[in-house]
Length: 252
Image 1 (tube, helix red, strand yellow):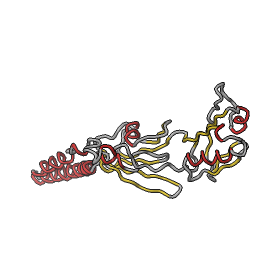
Image 2 (cartoon, helix red, strand yellow):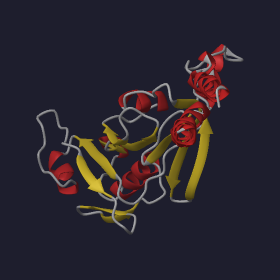
Image 3 (tube, one colour):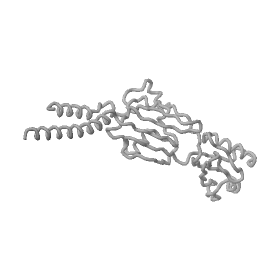
Image 4 (cartoon, helix red, strand yellow):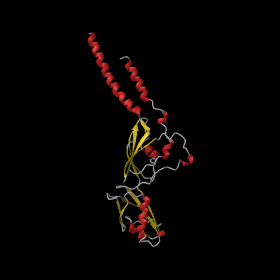
Protein backbone atom coordinates (compact mmCIF):
# COMPACT_ATOMS: atom_id res chain seq x y z
CA UNK A 1 0.00 0.00 0.00
CA UNK A 2 2.95 2.36 0.64
CA UNK A 3 3.98 2.13 -3.00
CA UNK A 4 0.51 3.02 -4.23
CA UNK A 5 0.83 6.81 -3.67
CA UNK A 6 4.15 6.85 -5.55
CA UNK A 7 2.62 4.86 -8.40
CA UNK A 8 -0.35 7.23 -8.57
CA UNK A 9 2.00 10.23 -8.52
CA UNK A 10 3.94 8.73 -11.44
CA UNK A 11 0.77 8.21 -13.45
CA UNK A 12 -0.40 11.75 -12.69
CA UNK A 13 2.87 13.25 -13.90
CA UNK A 14 2.73 11.04 -16.99
CA UNK A 15 -0.81 12.18 -17.80
CA UNK A 16 0.17 15.83 -17.35
CA UNK A 17 3.01 15.71 -19.87
CA UNK A 18 1.98 16.86 -23.37
CA UNK A 19 4.72 16.81 -26.05
CA UNK A 20 5.39 20.24 -27.54
CA UNK A 21 4.95 18.83 -31.05
CA UNK A 22 1.26 18.27 -30.29
CA UNK A 23 0.74 21.90 -29.25
CA UNK A 24 2.28 23.86 -32.15
CA UNK A 25 0.43 24.65 -35.37
CA UNK A 26 1.75 23.99 -38.88
CA UNK A 27 5.24 22.65 -38.15
CA UNK A 28 7.56 21.76 -41.00
CA UNK A 29 8.50 23.12 -44.39
CA UNK A 30 6.30 22.57 -47.46
CA UNK A 31 7.76 20.23 -50.08
CA UNK A 32 7.47 23.06 -52.58
CA UNK A 33 6.92 26.51 -51.14
CA UNK A 34 5.46 27.66 -54.46
CA UNK A 35 2.63 25.20 -53.97
CA UNK A 36 1.62 26.44 -50.53
CA UNK A 37 -1.23 28.58 -51.89
CA UNK A 38 -2.64 25.86 -54.16
CA UNK A 39 -5.12 24.58 -51.63
CA UNK A 40 -7.25 21.59 -52.57
CA UNK A 41 -10.81 22.78 -52.07
CA UNK A 42 -13.79 21.69 -54.15
CA UNK A 43 -16.49 24.33 -54.76
CA UNK A 44 -19.36 24.27 -52.28
CA UNK A 45 -22.64 22.82 -53.57
CA UNK A 46 -25.78 24.50 -52.30
CA UNK A 47 -28.11 22.69 -49.91
CA UNK A 48 -31.64 23.03 -48.57
CA UNK A 49 -31.84 25.84 -46.01
CA UNK A 50 -28.90 27.83 -47.38
CA UNK A 51 -29.30 31.55 -47.98
CA UNK A 52 -27.83 33.07 -51.10
CA UNK A 53 -27.37 36.69 -52.16
CA UNK A 54 -28.38 37.52 -55.73
CA UNK A 55 -27.43 40.90 -57.14
CA UNK A 56 -28.11 42.27 -60.61
CA UNK A 57 -26.62 45.41 -62.15
CA UNK A 58 -27.60 47.03 -65.43
CA UNK A 59 -28.22 50.36 -67.12
CA UNK A 60 -31.89 49.44 -67.35
CA UNK A 61 -33.03 50.23 -63.79
CA UNK A 62 -36.70 49.56 -64.42
CA UNK A 63 -36.03 46.09 -65.79
CA UNK A 64 -33.70 45.22 -62.90
CA UNK A 65 -36.34 46.19 -60.35
CA UNK A 66 -38.78 43.71 -61.89
CA UNK A 67 -36.45 40.77 -61.21
CA UNK A 68 -35.64 41.50 -57.58
CA UNK A 69 -37.50 41.29 -54.28
CA UNK A 70 -36.54 44.87 -53.49
CA UNK A 71 -37.22 47.60 -56.03
CA UNK A 72 -34.74 50.01 -54.43
CA UNK A 73 -32.18 51.09 -57.04
CA UNK A 74 -29.31 53.41 -56.20
CA UNK A 75 -28.17 56.35 -58.30
CA UNK A 76 -25.19 54.45 -59.72
CA UNK A 77 -27.56 51.96 -61.39
CA UNK A 78 -26.90 49.19 -58.88
CA UNK A 79 -29.48 47.21 -56.97
CA UNK A 80 -29.58 46.13 -53.36
CA UNK A 81 -28.70 42.39 -53.22
CA UNK A 82 -31.69 40.20 -52.37
CA UNK A 83 -31.47 37.22 -50.00
CA UNK A 84 -33.11 34.00 -51.17
CA UNK A 85 -33.63 30.93 -49.00
CA UNK A 86 -33.39 27.52 -50.65
CA UNK A 87 -36.64 25.70 -49.89
CA UNK A 88 -37.06 22.01 -49.09
CA UNK A 89 -37.38 21.24 -52.80
CA UNK A 90 -34.05 22.88 -53.53
CA UNK A 91 -35.58 25.92 -55.25
CA UNK A 92 -35.38 29.70 -54.94
CA UNK A 93 -38.23 31.82 -56.23
CA UNK A 94 -37.39 35.00 -58.14
CA UNK A 95 -39.84 37.55 -59.51
CA UNK A 96 -40.68 36.96 -63.20
CA UNK A 97 -38.24 34.05 -63.51
CA UNK A 98 -40.21 31.97 -61.01
CA UNK A 99 -38.72 28.91 -59.33
CA UNK A 100 -35.11 28.02 -60.11
CA UNK A 101 -33.66 24.75 -58.85
CA UNK A 102 -30.27 25.33 -57.25
CA UNK A 103 -29.85 22.22 -55.08
CA UNK A 104 -26.41 20.68 -55.62
CA UNK A 105 -25.22 23.58 -57.78
CA UNK A 106 -22.30 25.90 -57.06
CA UNK A 107 -22.91 29.65 -56.86
CA UNK A 108 -21.17 30.02 -60.24
CA UNK A 109 -23.52 27.48 -61.81
CA UNK A 110 -26.53 29.31 -60.35
CA UNK A 111 -25.25 32.58 -61.81
CA UNK A 112 -24.99 30.96 -65.24
CA UNK A 113 -28.56 29.61 -64.94
CA UNK A 114 -29.90 33.08 -64.08
CA UNK A 115 -27.95 34.68 -66.93
CA UNK A 116 -29.34 32.07 -69.29
CA UNK A 117 -32.89 33.03 -68.22
CA UNK A 118 -32.08 36.73 -68.58
CA UNK A 119 -31.26 36.19 -72.26
CA UNK A 120 -35.00 36.28 -72.99
CA UNK A 121 -35.32 39.77 -71.50
CA UNK A 122 -32.03 41.49 -72.32
CA UNK A 123 -30.98 41.98 -75.94
CA UNK A 124 -27.31 42.40 -75.09
CA UNK A 125 -25.70 39.96 -72.63
CA UNK A 126 -23.12 42.60 -71.81
CA UNK A 127 -25.80 45.02 -70.61
CA UNK A 128 -26.25 43.28 -67.26
CA UNK A 129 -24.12 41.74 -64.54
CA UNK A 130 -25.26 38.98 -62.17
CA UNK A 131 -23.59 38.12 -58.86
CA UNK A 132 -24.47 35.08 -56.71
CA UNK A 133 -22.79 34.22 -53.42
CA UNK A 134 -23.50 32.59 -50.07
CA UNK A 135 -24.97 34.83 -47.41
CA UNK A 136 -22.22 33.96 -44.92
CA UNK A 137 -20.72 30.65 -43.77
CA UNK A 138 -22.28 28.67 -40.94
CA UNK A 139 -20.23 26.05 -39.07
CA UNK A 140 -20.23 24.32 -35.68
CA UNK A 141 -17.26 23.51 -33.44
CA UNK A 142 -17.63 20.82 -30.76
CA UNK A 143 -15.36 18.88 -28.40
CA UNK A 144 -12.19 20.29 -26.82
CA UNK A 145 -12.67 23.96 -27.70
CA UNK A 146 -12.92 27.01 -25.46
CA UNK A 147 -16.13 28.32 -27.03
CA UNK A 148 -18.12 25.46 -28.61
CA UNK A 149 -21.28 25.89 -30.64
CA UNK A 150 -22.52 27.17 -34.00
CA UNK A 151 -20.97 30.24 -35.61
CA UNK A 152 -21.85 32.35 -38.65
CA UNK A 153 -19.30 34.56 -40.36
CA UNK A 154 -20.08 37.05 -43.10
CA UNK A 155 -17.32 35.85 -45.40
CA UNK A 156 -17.09 33.92 -48.66
CA UNK A 157 -13.99 32.00 -47.58
CA UNK A 158 -12.90 30.70 -44.17
CA UNK A 159 -9.99 28.48 -43.13
CA UNK A 160 -10.23 25.93 -40.33
CA UNK A 161 -7.63 27.96 -38.41
CA UNK A 162 -9.90 31.03 -38.61
CA UNK A 163 -12.87 28.94 -37.47
CA UNK A 164 -10.98 27.55 -34.47
CA UNK A 165 -9.58 30.97 -33.57
CA UNK A 166 -13.10 32.45 -33.64
CA UNK A 167 -14.17 29.73 -31.19
CA UNK A 168 -11.55 30.61 -28.59
CA UNK A 169 -8.77 28.29 -29.81
CA UNK A 170 -8.00 24.73 -28.71
CA UNK A 171 -7.00 24.28 -25.03
CA UNK A 172 -4.00 22.18 -24.02
CA UNK A 173 -6.31 19.19 -23.58
CA UNK A 174 -7.31 19.23 -27.27
CA UNK A 175 -5.60 17.09 -29.89
CA UNK A 176 -4.47 19.29 -32.79
CA UNK A 177 -3.17 16.22 -34.63
CA UNK A 178 -6.54 14.50 -34.84
CA UNK A 179 -9.25 17.01 -35.76
CA UNK A 180 -12.37 15.69 -37.45
CA UNK A 181 -14.38 17.62 -40.02
CA UNK A 182 -17.85 16.29 -40.82
CA UNK A 183 -18.99 17.63 -44.18
CA UNK A 184 -22.62 17.40 -45.28
CA UNK A 185 -23.41 17.65 -48.98
CA UNK A 186 -26.30 16.74 -51.31
CA UNK A 187 -24.35 13.56 -52.11
CA UNK A 188 -24.10 12.44 -48.49
CA UNK A 189 -21.99 12.96 -45.38
CA UNK A 190 -18.21 12.49 -45.22
CA UNK A 191 -15.78 12.60 -42.31
CA UNK A 192 -12.24 13.89 -42.75
CA UNK A 193 -9.27 14.06 -40.42
CA UNK A 194 -6.75 16.89 -40.47
CA UNK A 195 -3.47 17.32 -38.56
CA UNK A 196 -3.05 21.02 -37.77
CA UNK A 197 0.40 20.49 -36.25
CA UNK A 198 1.78 19.80 -39.73
CA UNK A 199 2.23 22.34 -42.52
CA UNK A 200 0.77 19.69 -44.83
CA UNK A 201 -2.62 20.71 -43.43
CA UNK A 202 -2.49 23.55 -45.95
CA UNK A 203 -3.00 20.97 -48.70
CA UNK A 204 -6.02 19.33 -47.07
CA UNK A 205 -9.38 19.52 -48.82
CA UNK A 206 -10.92 20.59 -45.51
CA UNK A 207 -8.42 23.37 -44.77
CA UNK A 208 -11.11 25.70 -46.09
CA UNK A 209 -14.37 25.33 -44.17
CA UNK A 210 -17.59 24.97 -46.10
CA UNK A 211 -21.10 25.96 -45.11
CA UNK A 212 -22.69 23.56 -42.56
CA UNK A 213 -19.37 21.88 -41.62
CA UNK A 214 -18.96 20.33 -38.16
CA UNK A 215 -15.50 20.52 -36.56
CA UNK A 216 -14.86 18.02 -33.78
CA UNK A 217 -11.80 18.57 -31.57
CA UNK A 218 -10.85 15.25 -29.97
CA UNK A 219 -9.23 15.18 -26.49
CA UNK A 220 -5.60 14.18 -26.08
CA UNK A 221 -5.00 10.63 -24.80
CA UNK A 222 -3.42 12.21 -21.70
CA UNK A 223 -6.77 13.75 -20.76
CA UNK A 224 -8.53 10.38 -20.80
CA UNK A 225 -5.71 8.92 -18.71
CA UNK A 226 -5.88 11.81 -16.26
CA UNK A 227 -9.65 11.53 -15.88
CA UNK A 228 -9.36 7.78 -15.38
CA UNK A 229 -6.58 8.33 -12.88
CA UNK A 230 -8.74 10.79 -10.95
CA UNK A 231 -11.49 8.19 -10.65
CA UNK A 232 -8.95 5.50 -9.73
CA UNK A 233 -7.38 7.76 -7.10
CA UNK A 234 -10.78 8.33 -5.53
CA UNK A 235 -11.45 4.59 -5.39
CA UNK A 236 -7.96 3.93 -4.02
CA UNK A 237 -8.50 6.52 -1.29
CA UNK A 238 -11.73 4.82 -0.23
CA UNK A 239 -10.03 1.40 -0.17
CA UNK A 240 -7.14 2.85 1.84
CA UNK A 241 -9.57 4.40 4.33
CA UNK A 242 -11.48 1.13 4.74
CA UNK A 243 -8.22 -0.81 5.21
CA UNK A 244 -6.96 1.66 7.82
CA UNK A 245 -10.26 1.49 9.68
CA UNK A 246 -10.15 -2.33 9.75
CA UNK A 247 -6.56 -2.30 11.06
CA UNK A 248 -7.49 0.19 13.79
CA UNK A 249 -10.47 -1.92 14.83
CA UNK A 250 -8.33 -5.06 14.97
CA UNK A 251 -5.76 -3.28 17.09
CA UNK A 252 -8.31 -2.36 19.75
